[in-house]
Length: 304
Ligand code: PPE
Image (cartoon, rainbow, N blue to C red):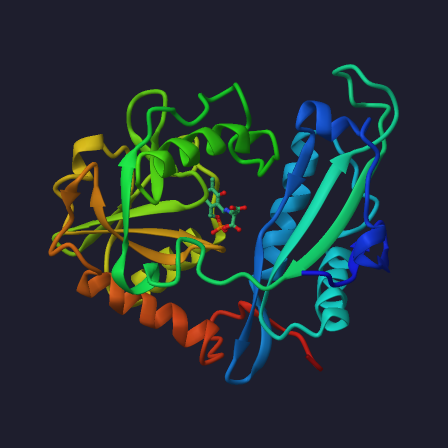
């Protein structure tokens, strides 16, 4: 993991990329971040939907009134450079923007805004066999944030305190992941993934606006499945729809498309990856493995 890190505009050695203990973000969760993947496709290394991820980073920062001193385009160029310097043909990219030094106390307006981009190799998020065999999940006993509490459209560090509670409870009880409901009891998403339900060939997912992160993989899957001729319904999904689904899967940059084989010990479908999930994964892997790019989603990273 010890590759150079892009830190406030410069690529610096891994050990030098440190912050002070009185940084605002450490005390109050005042950071925003992204998770992006670079794939070693058959046509060369390429970053998946780089611009959309950096746009969401800029949006998240704007929501929290953080002024990033770099443009979206400069951040994209910095990500490519960081990968080239690390010589990683396939990796996970983690941009982070946070409130640094200034004063302590809740008001962050006078604190610095710092930025960094790190890259590392990251395999399958929910375990090496998850993409094929699926994962076992529970409905979490913590909800997603209510509207007008924490902004769900921002991918902010502080949001992941809630995600950590969900993940820890799931893991301690022997599950791989937890699915959160929103405050009204409708299905929202996993601690670090969006969620799709398939029943009778139709896909259902929570709409952005009902306390989910507007996932870029989610958006990609909606595009891909519509092209495959399937219908996608974005709406309120009651908890019990999970238990009677034909197929279920998570989507996310880290999780990619991970099938879910059980929820709360209810077996989903035949208890392994379903046929439509497999077909959707194939279409996704046509892009990120074979390097086919019908939607202009790949940014090449030359020379790695
Ligand atoms: N919901 C949440 C809460 C979430 O954290 C992610 C990404 C998604 C949905 C999917 O969004 P997208 O990656 O744009 O399709 N979670 C990131 C962080 C995971 C982590 O453990 O850290 C990720 O997948 O990179």
